[in-house]
Image (cartoon, rainbow, N blue to C red):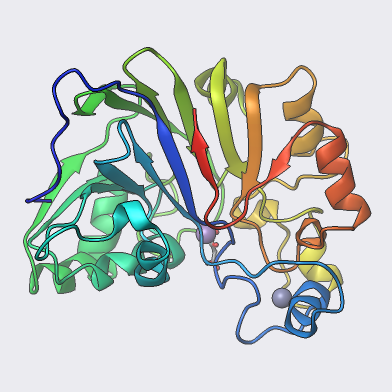
Length: 311
Ligand code: MLT
Ligand code: MN
Ligand code: ZN
């Protein structure tokens, strides 16, 4: 977006990640939910921290920032992040937005960024079509500000700016598409972002199965930010909140023999792994729960809003 800070010559290029929001759709607590974690965080009866809906910002220099997904909480998330606030006039250090899919909790924030002078948007053709032609979110946005679409092609290396590039990878899913056809390729992707010296972070807030292709895309990364939606596959069913399993919704559970904790921890898929996109029903949100202890005893972490990582 115009007016953003430029790198200073000779400046050390590194890789920064700021967790803007760490909850799944609805946030934590969710306005219409009284499940055990939502009730506990409202009353303070158990140790738990409120969370906004998932999004991260990535930067090669702590000056130019790229948003990964734009959550409905984006205004509050920017205000809480000193590095993302405008420096002078209306110049903001946000350079572009990269989308993993067309879910509303990952895209509604685009409409809230309409006051900017324009938006650079990276997403696959399937996601663009869903947002432009099917639910018309992008057509609405375009009546307020120019939108420049950069088509994302899984497997291609793309330079975002000096010192930062990405490679998207396809995340196979059988989840029912809310917008557009169920079988469109590129409906869900993950991103591997790399700094100048090869350090890399993977953003994967939705993954239904750790397929060989997904594991290959994650392999050897320094930091993995991965889908922590549900602890168990039948979590929402057992609580009487929904009829579908976690996997039906495109999210592999953390626990159990084929959960992501077992699959990603031995051997460790990444130098550092953090769960985010955590649904409000997930017991890992309760900081003294056995599930939280299980995550931590496997050497994995639970992300929280405002966390800043220097990769
Ligand atoms: C998802 O990523 O699947 C969403 O969090 C679903 C939702 O917002 O309901
Ligand atoms: Mn989501
Ligand atoms: Zn809840």
